[in-house]
Image 1 (cartoon, rainbow, N blue to C red):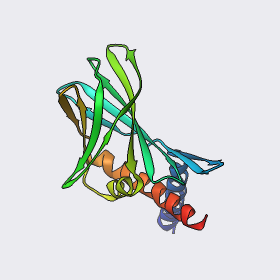
Image 2 (cartoon, rainbow, N blue to C red):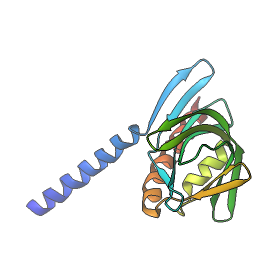
Image 3 (cartoon, helix red, strand yellow):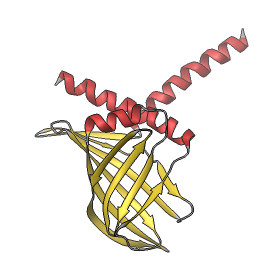
Image 4 (cartoon, one colour):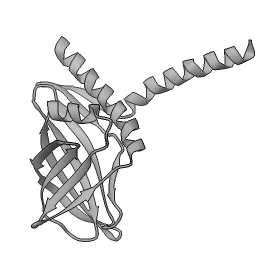
Length: 173
């Protein structure tokens, strides 16, 4: 009886924990022109050879078709970023990047940029199991960054659920 009770409690607490974790990754606020969602997946793409990193967050207003992908790119050199691409299998989405700021962060240059992507493209991206590559284009050059498959699998499931929640609430409004 005790092993069954332990297993039952484990299943219940795991379900509760997973439900609570989702709210750690996004916030929402009613705006005059829709609901604004801010999603922070806490994922990091890396290029170990070039010692560069990229983190991002997503901002979406329900009355728009576009999701803003705001990203921070750390590099040893100041870069003027033109655009960003996300490549996942044969799917390739790209967007012009707009500079927010550039500053120093210890030995790195911290580049903060924003790019717009269609909600449908971002939604499809996070439904895929295969981890994507991110390509940053700057000054006639580019760098490619990747993410560990296990991290992508876990985080994309969370983001996909948030995007489903957004779609479900959007339909009812």
